[in-house]
Image (cartoon, rainbow, N blue to C red):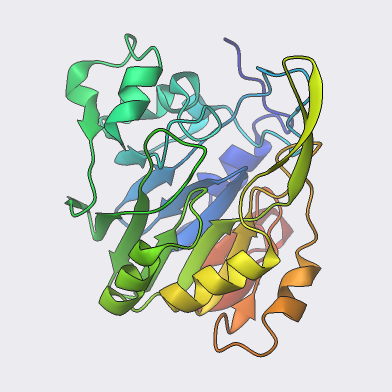
Length: 284
């Protein structure tokens, strides 16, 4: 399968690879639920998905593909949350592993997809409770609840400057309260959506996907997320949601303190609220 960037090489060259991360943690949004995370000495990817291929006729990727995976100049590890192709897709993460890292994912991912092109040494099965040291990052595997997935986990990434939570498509559950008690989360991503009108076996149905506004706030309070980034809500043509509704839903709750909307290609700093302007516009 061929992956073609909508932006050519400029974003990967000038932004992802071109920005000098001198300190702390920088994060770039890749679309859907995908992120590139870099420190001065480490680069990891979570749920990278660069495909525009449509496996169901009623859905199509709406956000741009910012890069082709072989353009990344570093990757120490890939972490995937669950066994859906827009979170675990070998053509998307395979080229990233050429830098020497392994893909970490629940066992169902390796069982439900053809991973024959990925050597066994580059496949790591994760379970809640596992932890991995990747350069100056510590990645903790924790539980979650995704009724649409065969196997799912969440990730907590610790650095000396702060802590990140990546929830994949998971929804509020007891594991979130346990994570919130264990970690002080500075920045967290959760998949946001709504009821979707979809076609299954020729029949039009309405089906709930991802967290609605109330569930996003419930999850943020269970986890204690200071800065919340809603993701995934522009992934599918039939599953758009309004992130503005989150501010209204969160008005009377302790968390989140800040809700930050994200566009593909945006860079965030873990120690600095707000989107950092791209390097092509003058950087910091």
